[in-house]
Length: 139
Image (cartoon, rainbow, N blue to C red; front, side):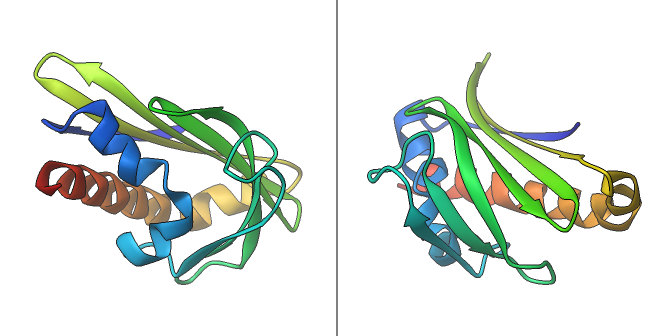
């Protein structure tokens, strides 16, 4: 699994305001064009599904598999023989809190996707972590 973490001084509640508001990621994060709730529980919970569009990537549907308000969530998207698992967490660290983001690929074509998209995925996650931390600190 590939992971990044971004430390910041914002409280977990302020970080969750941006991390957990996935429907507005297209408005807040440069790495998302749009995220649209398409079915499942509303408000967001385990089983909620979202249509996700990101620059340079195929449109995907992600389903929430873990939802812990104030702490984090996991969602899984499936496209053409690859399952992409995105892990999004808020964790305390010595001076404040961290936004921790992770991604992993599985499925019959994961071996082909990893070398093609790993560097881009790391850059995107770093941008997302930095943006969420900045927004929460400015809030």
